[in-house]
Image (cartoon, rainbow, N blue to C red; front, side):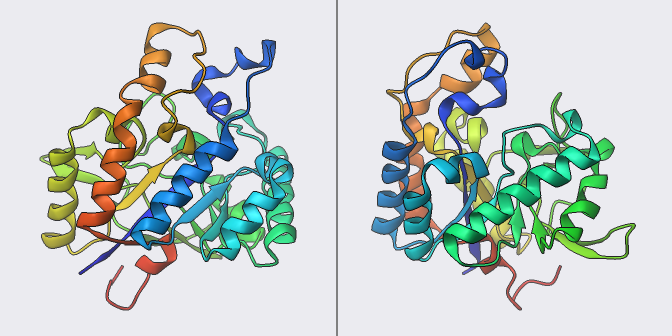
Length: 278
């Protein structure tokens, strides 16, 4: 049985990109602690370890929580310091952001931080320069590229399977793209976030089985703690932003629990076994 990867992007519900420019105007109730307890409980019941991509700013506030997550055997990786899109940063700003977050996480866990995921998957064709900076900072793998195309993210023609990238600076980094199902010339997202919330579980299960059995590849699942918190406060935004954030929040927990029952899961690094040739 192929081991798939379960990954959690650790941020507050009000830190998402859809609410930028809105949340700065008022204070919102922190709910990360309780939503993280829900995530940890589900993983503990399933006896599964995950990769947690943690914002440095969150780790500063919840040092004890992040240390406990690490002590429980989960893998801690970086989500940057602030939830800033890479294409809205200069090279120097990005470097300072990831170095600051990496140091905070390593100080808390006492372990090297080898993995990175950009906020809102913002490594696109115009920000591939970020991979050079990640290797210089000591990161071994990245999971920021989505092989689809959306307004804010995606590289449509990127590899659908993990691939070792040779950067212009001569260093290598393993890119672990978010999973999609190939349908003709289209890559269909299904394995996390709003896509998981919108789709029926039967579709998610079918896509996972197909990629495992027909392609022999692990599926990279991602979600956020706030997606397991349907009672979170409502933030007023335009219709599409509210729809993307709040649609089917009540379905996430049930789908996640069932997915962990139906398939084998572990942290992202558990997918890099000798059983897979990338």
